[in-house]
Image 1 (cartoon, helix red, strand yellow):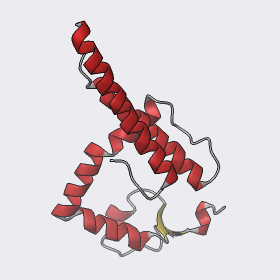
Image 2: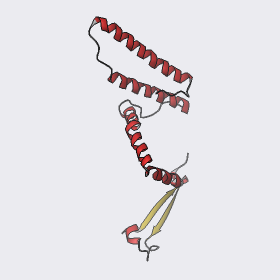
Image 3: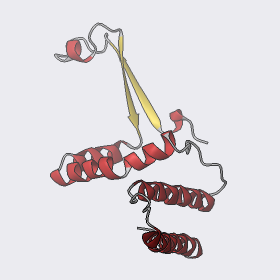
Image 4: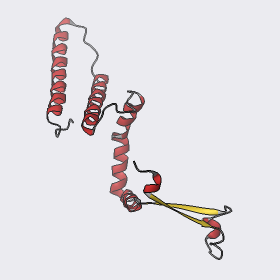
Amino acid sequence: MQGKKDYQEELITNFHQCKGCPFAKSCIGNSPERRITITYYREHDERIKAKLATPEGRRMKSHRQSVVEPVFGVLTQFMGMRKLYTKGIRNANKQMLMAAAAYKLKKLLKHAKPPIKSVANSKVLSQSRQALEKVICCQVLRRFKHPEIMLT
């Protein structure tokens, strides 16, 4: 496993080296030294920052923050998925798929209509609920048989 020192470089300068520099007061201030850390991922970080500075990048970031990240927040904070308890990427994918299915089911049940009290309509409601359960189970099972198929 790599430590922090394996992928970053730290540059240290002291106030003696900065004498005569017009930016020394704003750069170092009153501290005796200045530490600058440069990671090997700096080029990637700069590309990402440049991409996020564009209107398209800002739109994509706001979309991700409003659609994707709340799901992970609910899974980790309220549904207890702070850790994956499986070994291997395939099993982790299965666990995340089941968590996503549980999230969608919970969301679907939240927006379901309240139960109908009349006897005539209760039969129709139970049939439609059974059909819905069957469709969801088929999608989940199909996803396990064919991992390349994504649930929508």
